[in-house]
Each structure stands twice: as C-alpha cells, then as structure tokens.
Length: 283
Image (cartoon, rainbow, N blue to C red; front, side, top):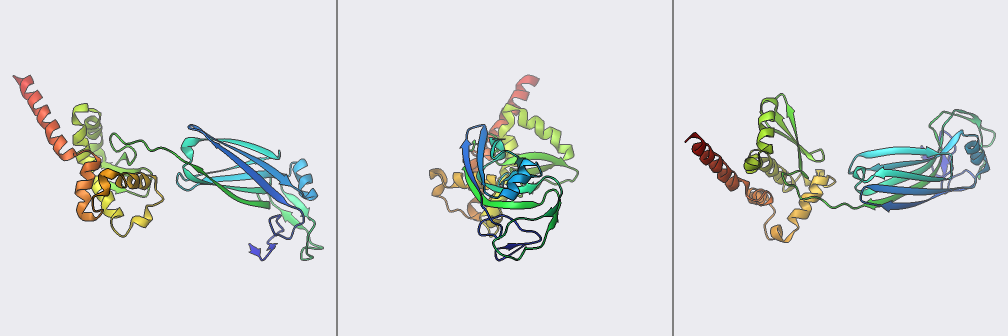
C-alpha cells in the first residue's frame, strides 16, 4: 500500500520514495532460438540495505512474467549482477521484468535513513519474503515464427472426456478439443493414417475452426486477442489469400475450408480410395 511517496506497512526504497539512497537496475536481453539470456546489473546506494545483503538477510530479486504463455518465475541473488537463462519456449511477445530487494530472513527492529521524519523513532519487524526495495519495471519482446499446422497443430490440441459431445475450449493455448472417451482411440487411429488425414480435418479440425471463426467474427473477439492461436489466425486472415474475403460469420464455412485446404472434398476422395482399396482386396 502506498500513500504519495510513503510506503506502508514499512518503508521501501524506490524512485521518488522516502528512503534515502537509490536502487536501479540495468537489464540486457539476448534472445536466441532456443534460449533467452537476461543479465541484470543492480546499482544500490543505501548502506543499510547493502549491509543486509552482505549479511545475506536481503537479496536482489527479479520477477519475470509473460502473460501470453502464463509463465512467471522469481529469482534471487546476493550478487549485484544476475544472469538468468530461460528456455525460449516459455516466453512469447512482451515479457515483463520487475526488479526488487527482498528479505530472505526475518529482520527485527528494521530502520533506515529517511528524507522525511514520518518514520523517525520507529522500527519494523519484517518477515521473510517482504519487499524492501523496488527499482521499477522493464519489458522486452520475444518474437517467434509460427509454424503452419499440418493438422491444425498451431490451433488445437486433443483431449478426452466422459461426455457424449465434442467440446471446444477457446480459453487455452492452443484451443482444446475434448472428444468423448469412447471415440478418442478411434480418432487417433484415423489421425495416424496418411490416407485418412482429410477425414480427421472434417470430423474435428473443420467444425472446431467454424466455431472459432464465429466467435472472433462476432462480438466476443476481444476475449481472445491475447491468445497465441488468435495471433496466428489473424496473420493468416491478413494474408493476400484471405484479405479479399469478407470476414464475417456468413463467410466462416468458406474460410475454414480454405484454411484446411478444402477438407470436405478431400475427405470424400480419401473415403472413396479406401472403399476402392477394400473392394480390390476382397476380390
């Protein structure tokens, strides 16, 4: 809780705060294909907090989070230079870094030096995990190339459930297609068969995409704009092949078929080939 430049329930060293001294962090980021390297240099000019760090009662901390992948992790160190390596798969687009000083042990009778007298003649009992300094927030971008799905892989993952109907959950990345348990193994057999891929599209990927398009062409698209599957779909619909089409619910069946390269026609052709093959085998 903060009131103007004062911090409660105890004083915190921060920009324009009441504690004397400064705490700043310089963050450098190197994004590679498989790894993101973050190097943070901590600059602290407060003797009380420096002593606590030397006594290993207070540590430098980084909190790294990415809302698109729902990744969040905190790191602490007693060294003023921190180097962190994170698998690139855990981050996408805008990633946020918050830098702070955190108590790693309980501290009794804490006092510091202040610019105003609001804290004079007062001390504080601090618990492990409490924040004592904050240098601000930084962000960086982790751009990634989307892979065009062979079987809707950038859009959908498959799972089974105990019900009788197929369900779609757009609130996850990728979209979750939940299939009745009794159909799940049959679906996997169809999906693995090279001669039946278009049938798989028609049974599961195509109707799922119809539902997705009806949602984003309707009034609910704002709910999904932060999702990875939405970003990929937006890129596809912005391409020259789709830009000429009216993006509305009436065009959804045509657009869904184009995305999966006309699965309804192809599935008929695949089934016909299987039937002909069975007929020839029986002869």
